[in-house]
Image (cartoon, rainbow, N blue to C red; front, top):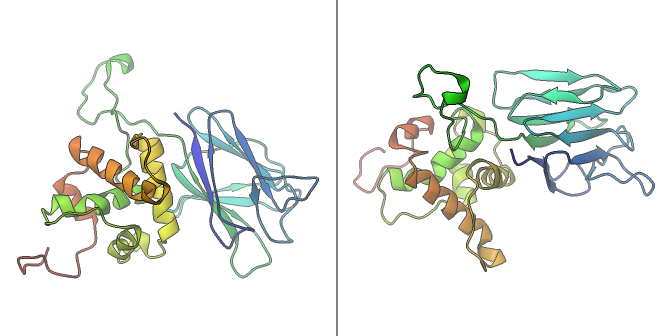
Length: 257
């Protein structure tokens, strides 16, 4: 349980922000001011100077609504429309979603929002049978195969799984294009893919990048490390290709892949 990632997309505040909070750490959000500093600055006059607070715990995160008038929504973008309404002045509301979008009302045409990637959810080994809780084997890498981050991981691993040669790690724009026709990814952006990659590398798979990697190559190195680990341990396998949209172009042998 190594904490949460909070991402404020560009256009919702003064600038895009990505924060990592460890267990026990907090981040405040709102319009902010010189006397009211906030970690996530939301640029809209309808948002309070101090609108709320995020608190990371050992196994989930909590949302406090510090507004006196406005309720906030916490949506599950990868579910079937599930959401929670956090009423005004509610402190420490526990959020169960592994990936969530916090939505605040505003005077703009579209609401303000930011994303939260929750602490690592733990799943039992699907092959375990019976026995006490203490005797059951936990999975080393607990990934939700219905989540968008898993689709991103499968798209990154696809060239190797399809035995395409030469195999290169897809770039972020290539992943966006590959998943565009998937119903859950119609609005997927390059920045969102990068956030999913960070979540996979830092929280889910806990990869280590080589020391001395140059800043320009860091993102590419992270993609390669994630793909290498996922393939090496069979986290992504050939049957997972069925989760991806049907390719729009034929393979090198001329057949539809």
